[in-house]
Length: 124
Image 1 (cartoon, rainbow, N blue to C red):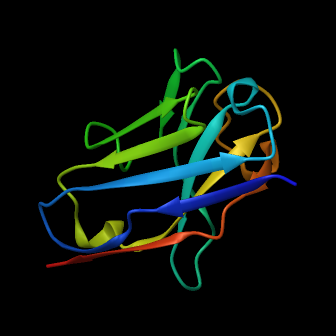
Image 2: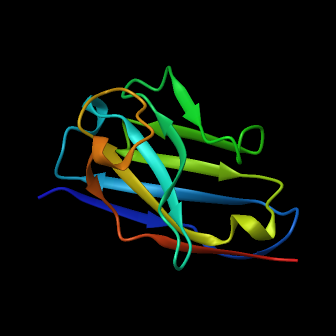
């Protein structure tokens, strides 16, 4: 059974930083791309970032480019999202997801398994 568990969310002031983690089990982690999405109440889930299975390619949503960095440690079956220069509009539930293949897709349908999410709140 595939399981993805996010951690590292919390409350931070604008301009601050957080590092999210995504621990994976039940799959050969190094075979699949990893993505992060976020969602606020009443809104569609938004693509944040993705990293290829080997970690050599990344993709970012326009709203986080230059501020967020995605990475992964395949030896630890864990992915990360480093979030810097946080803004109040970054407030959301953040989800990690494993893709059906090794690339960096930006659409939800390309992802096979999802975590339950972690709340990030940025105060002004």
